[in-house]
Every structure is written in C-alpha cells, then in structure tokens.
Image 1 (tube, protein in one colour):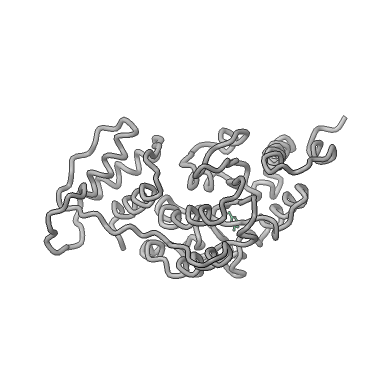
Image 2 (spheres, protein in one colour; image 1 turned 60 degrees about the vertical axis):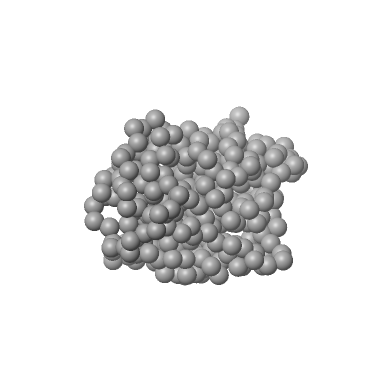
Length: 301
Ligand code: URA
C-alpha cells in the first residue's frame, strides 16, 4: 500500500509533466491535503539512505501546490524523496493502435492496483478514437465490468438515447471513464460506489493520455465525478453546466450524468438543461440542428 502522500504526489507530478502549473483547491481538497500532510508525519516505509539531490523534497512540492490556495505551507519533511512519475505512453501508428496500447498498460497499472480498493477487471473505453466528440463518465459498474465496456448498463441505455437524439451513435463518438476499474465494496453484488479522490488520481493519467491521442473537438463530462476528475471542479452539476470549460485546450461541457435521468430523478426542466448542453455541443461540432431537435423537452403549449 503506497503512502497517501505518494499517491497525491504522483498525481501532481503527472499533471506537472503535462504542463499543468496550477491546481485549484476548494475547502474539501484542502481538508484532504491537510489530512495527507498529517499522515506524512507518521511512519513511512524504511528507505535506503538517499543521495543528495537538487530535486525539491516531496512534501515541499506538495506544499508548493497548496500555496496556490493561500494555505500556509506545511513544514518540510526532510526525508521524502520524489517517487518516479508513472505515465502511460501511447505507442502505435494510428489512434486506434495508440488507444489499444494505453488500454494494455491500464490492465496492470501499478498505481491503481497499489491502492487495493479497486476491482481487478480493467474497463477502458468504447467507440471511435477518431471521433470529434469524447464523452467521459465516472467508473465502470457491474454491467460494464462484466462486458468490459463503458456505459452498457441502464445509464448506458440513457446515453444511447441522448446520442440518438443528437443524430449520433457509438461508432461516431469516443466514450471513456475517469476510473478504469470498478470501485470495490465489502460484500459487493450489483451495488456501485463513487470512486475516491485517490482512485481518480491513480487513473487520471489515462484520461489525459486518451485526450491527447483522440484530440476531440469537444469533450462532455458526464456528471460531477467526471467534472471533478477532468476539471478539478466540485459542487453541484447545476453550478458547472451551461458553460464551456477548458480541458487540455479542448472545449469541455459538464452536464448531468445519464444515470440521473433514471428512476424519475430528473425533472422535465433538468432534462431540458441536459439537452441544451447537448445542443451547444452539436453547435460546437458544427452539426445541423433541426427545429424538432431545438424543441426537445420544451414545455408544451
Ligand atoms: N456510469 C459511468 O460513469 N460509467 C460507466 O461506464 C457506467 C456507468
């Protein structure tokens, strides 16, 4: 089991390696970092004596990120060495080959397995790596794990309906998840849980690498977890949707997770809001929009 501070640092280094220089921290993230810092003062696995190095000590680097959020930096723990950055490297001539190579690396991804809190079956992505539209969900559930394909359960049926209303099908889009393994629970049957921040951090290098391979025209983050993983946003989906965000230079829209449409969770007005997000996505993609499509979920009368 890795020390929690190393999990956070792996994530930050991966982001840094990708050119990210700022990470915004809300109150919850600050609380998590504070807890991680407290744990970093506890016993760490014994290490051979390290050679002098110019690299900034690990906890110091964590403090440097925390400073962005106007937090007083925690004192440096002198014995923390930087751990090697774990980044998947796509190989292959075509986008399909590169995605396949990433999926092969995800099968045995040490940062995910080291957590011990994710199940072992890897579920990568589905659809077309040449697509102009990329949709990102949270994590596989029971059905996705069985079929080793994202969004094949009830939420997937809702997603297919949304795509159909847009005039699209799975072969024309690329669909993936932030977390590549089903989050494990005690005595788990068909029940699923939201991934933890550590589980997201362990898998985030893949979604970043997938975006770099696919380079879609726009991205849709389906639900709050996808928005948190991609954009670092927390709060209600209502507060994130209705505008364009930026992920790796690609216009990114946040909308409700298709599962939210199930069991009468979403009001007619919320369905319309989801649809308005999709109309914006269609416009961004330069797709024709019919009068019928414009009017979906508008109040009758
Ligand atoms: N929900 C998700 O976010 N992803 C899936 O693959 C299935 C359900």
